[in-house]
Length: 83
Image (cartoon, rainbow, N blue to C red; front, side):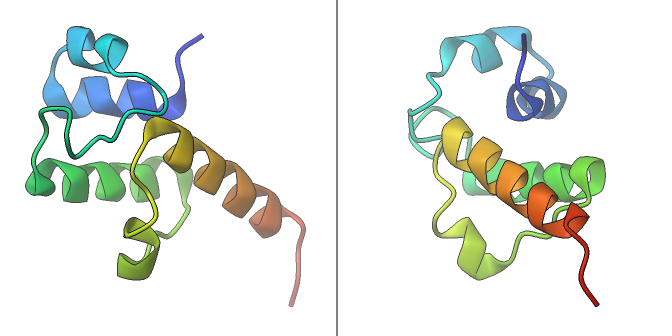
């Protein structure tokens, strides 16, 4: 099963090969996509998941696993209610 981030990487790069080749714990920044692509990835994550990612958050999001964990934590926190 493909992860949300892998699906977004396919959308971002236009190729499934990149998303399949990168390891879950491999740094995205060193894997062939540039800083502009990382910003576009963040925008796609926000649009598709409704999870907001701040500039401070981005400093800690380096791998597919980091993004997946972040989205899962924020999605649970957001659905837990509040207010």
